[in-house]
Length: 292
Image (cartoon, rainbow, N blue to C red):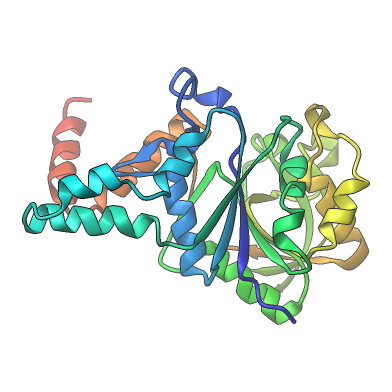
């Protein structure tokens, strides 16, 4: 079995739920304290053993490419500036060394399935991880790594899942699952954005999956689905019905960075754990809470 060493990060969405902030700035570049959201996603992939990453963008998202590139002028300014600036220099340079990072543009906004299909040339005949650009997952054990371990054990495509409320399930996907053990399940069916009478369970795919290269041929045959777009979930449903997939109820906290409340939750909760500002920010919140 081939190892999972490549990852695809679709980051071509328009960010309409976060306007006007995303009018000229990609939502993937919105900061969580002092790092953009997409850096957390790339770091998760690297911690999971991924060495090669393809980020799928579209027009107007050059800031993402710039972030993972070298910045000679900034580096020159920081060089020789004492211990504090030296630390900043290493942090800035290290971003460009996280992994082998490539970029391709999705020239039409035709859905997540279409975006992933743009990665065929990059993936070749290997299994690969997909880390959704909207979803930052923070935890000691990287979520992508948990899915990779399940792939290595069962040899089938893997879905990163969480239970969501019955009220919210219509915004996501609904999976037909049966337990294997602990937080592992078999999945043999799913539906994207289910109507109330289509709900299979309250387990939904949230931001991570491991896919075999066969998914590309399936995507080629997948017609437009919800919102008139080519849905990755529809292709994965074909795969689940044909071969079965494994679902992992991953550990870690997931933040929806395409949602204003999710952005604020991520910023507050990460700030509380930040080694530099954490204690001071905690004191500030306690004082603020007394005025609410």
